[in-house]
Image 1 (tube, rainbow, N blue to C red):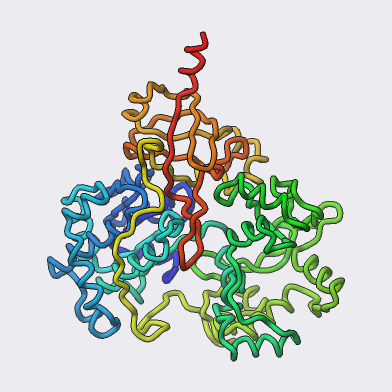
Image 2 (cartoon, rainbow, N blue to C red):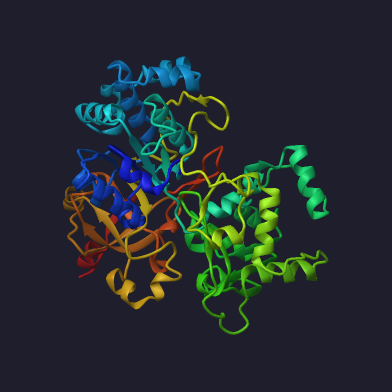
Amino acid sequence: MTNSISCVEQADAFFVIGSNPTENHPLIGARILRQVTAGGAKLVVADPRRIHLASFADVYLQHRCGTDVALLNGIMNVILEEGLEDREFIAERTEDFEAFREVIAGYTPDRAEEITGVPRDDIIRAARIYASSQNAMIFYAMGITQHTTGVDNVHSCANLAMLTGNMGRPGTGVNPLRGQNNVQGACDLGGLPNVYSGYQKVTDPAIREKFEKAWGVSLPGEVGLSVTEIIHGAGSGKIRGLYIMGENPVLSDPDAHRVRECLEKCEFLVVQDIFMTDTAEYADVILPGVSFAEKDGTFTNTERRIQRIRKAGDGPGESRQDWEIITLLAGRMGYEMKYDSPSAIMDEMARMTPIYGGVSFKRLDESCGLQWPCPDDGHPGTPVLHAGTFSRGKGKFFPVPYKAPDEEPDDEYPFTLTTGRIYFHFHTGTMTRRTVALDREAPECYVEMNPEDAEALGASDRDMVSVTTRRGSIRVRVFLTPGIRKGTIFVPFHFREAAANVLTNPVLDPTAKIPEYKVCAARVELERKEEDEEG
């Protein structure tokens, strides 16, 4: 997030797109809802499903899956046509505006309606609300990023914020909501194939030399593989050994049948986890980790806040903390890691990572956390990014034309399938489906379908159907709701017995290498009809 969670209380308007915060980020969702209902803030929601927050929206934009760029460009077209842009901000703090303007000129409200299915008048109303508010926040999540055009979608959100000057102040900004509690921390500290900690590029010789001297090793200068590419590499023989820690790609990666085939072909697979997952079933070696309550360290949350976690008790059996397992393995492989505690690891992080330079366990123990950038011991942390200037100097406008998803509906697969999370379960259900109260609330998978689509299919609520794509098929019950767009279906991905990612498309965004989980072509077939015919 460019801003802090507390900025919600200072916002006059919210634009929520590709995110369902009241279900997936409920503490933030509750703050947004309170600011709208009690604080008088305006709300624009864009989502193919009528999520809970849409009931409180001043404008609800129910666009077709995968048309986010066209919708955002349509909104920005209105802003420019009506002179609602922040000309002073654009002139002083941005560049490449004219090239951006040329592209936006082609996305009139009428053209945006044709692509997205959103009425032109709603696009105009949404543009006026966002642009005329003094402080407006954009919130998005994986509904924006998990596309072949995910990078384009993010660029479009940034374009909208810069166009209206909604950057660098409390109550503004572009605010992606992270999917898990320490995703931000994992990215910050090198859990990406193209950077070391603090987003320092592996292709930069000076940066690479710095880490080589600190670690006493020679490091490669090429960008590595993304998660999906690694799994496929295991299937092709390019990757011979694989170490998976705290991840369950058999359920979380797209085209799950192919993932299983790839793991079966992998010569040597190690899985480190707290439970016996579907992925662990393919492992040659299983290393027992511990839960958050059984380890010391830090998590960095969605607002860039680095927070201490403290061990409340020992893990069961032979389980160990992640850092202990890694250092022991490194020692067995001939490389001694001389850490005696997580605090020592954090000290190295601070030495090697400028944005974490002022972070230490001592400081964290005396506070509720520090927000990076925090470059030195005397720095208080940074609640709002890009105040006064952008990290690159001037903010860059990206001219982004609309590109269709990789798969669109056709005669054989007439529906658009999208996937996501629900309130009662988390990710692949490894933890939440072992919790009786949560599993009782949502015990089985289902497919959300518009009643008009169900009527044409001859299906009723709770009927059993098969959902099929070019990659596979699952059996689920129908859940009828007028809240989902006609021609669109939604399947949650928490359920191993009806794994949504059997269906999803593994095609990647060419830049970020993120799979297109949110859009693929599907068909739905009513199983009861076959039984009736047999009778």
